[in-house]
Length: 265
Image (tube, rainbow, N blue to C red; front, side, top):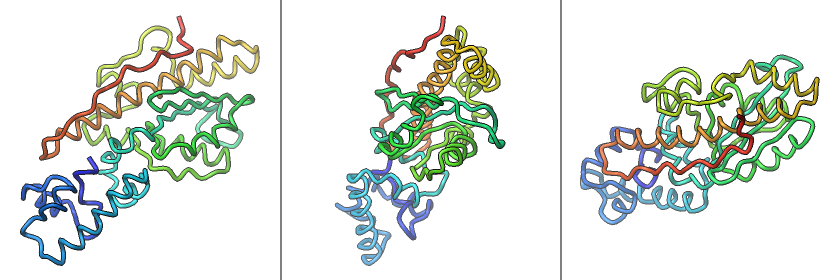
């Protein structure tokens, strides 16, 4: 969608962007070939400079540039051009962030590979691995996951961040992650259908007390299921947003998710 966007350019608001589209100019390349006639030559030249910069930022995989220049309700536009540098993130914790609360597990999924981190084992590897990505997709991560991660590790997460809680809400979907999953047709089955954040704490406590590998694997399965479903939700949300635009744009295919390595019977 960024290739068709102009509202991230200084002095170009949503109304001007719509006028550009309505003039028959639907992309950056089309603007450079033939600027809309309602713009002055000086204005067109200035916008062309910003368009060239935007194209360079896309090529350089600088998602943060667009994140900083788009309005927050338009951040979803980043997704397509930066899909290959996007990671889906979810954490499990022992609480909501009170003193003494810890991160128990973290799951990452980049559309190809699943990574998971366990407190007391490899959790510090997360700090290095997260730097490989330019965009984070979460559900309620702006309020919970990212602040918790920053406080727990003492680091700053400065990625472009697409929080599906707000993107889906703008499309009429509300509630928690599982509720949005059901509304969009991906209900969970089997043992994971009854696992929630509170039960995840109980699983961790049981693992720490009894060293039960089954409890740990159930927790990891739940954590990983979240990030696998985030990809589906993100693409669904992006496609629904695309259909709202006054342009004839291609939607994205939803890939087949990999098997959860900790599938529970």
